[in-house]
Image (tube, rainbow, N blue to C red):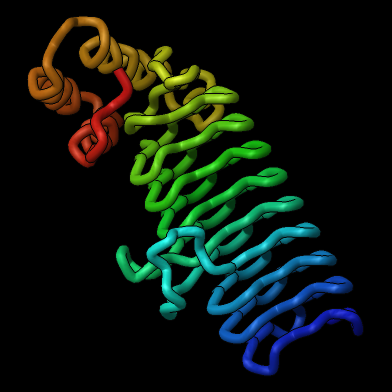
Length: 256
């Protein structure tokens, strides 16, 4: 399953059925789980753990030293889960000791061409990052998020669950769960209604989230006053809890 022109370091550990294409380089400390297919001209530099049934396309670079100028060669890691698709030219870098020392990607994600995931990022499950989307260092992207092509997220930014960033968005502040943003800088444009419908959210829950959005963005309330009102709404509509959590977790302030 390993092409004769591929170079696999003896210190790498690959499951028996892993496929490796021509001219691919796999370095020391790399682990690859069963069913994963690695295409041609892929570079997996070092200290990277890749789970099962992933598909990695040509010219992707995984586990490379990060671009943080503080990085001085310390032992850090990249961890990728299962059932991810990493398309052509994507770059996923290892973490730094100034954070937790690891960049993490969950399961069932799609990273389209030339996506960049910088050091110490955490990406959840079922996300889609379209062509040329870029995450600065220490960014967190929660489950079921979609980032349109050429979206750029500032360092330490947070994107809440089920959020949607339109193509070309410059995200300088945190995006709350369920919210759609677009623009440079990114501004809120309602709830990600279409995405919620596709994921099986019932009409009552979607309407409750619309009410939550109006509380947060349309009533002129302070953030703390908004949170109190959202907590009351969450008593009868538990989906609002994820919105509250994302607001309370914000460190950069939320898009307004």
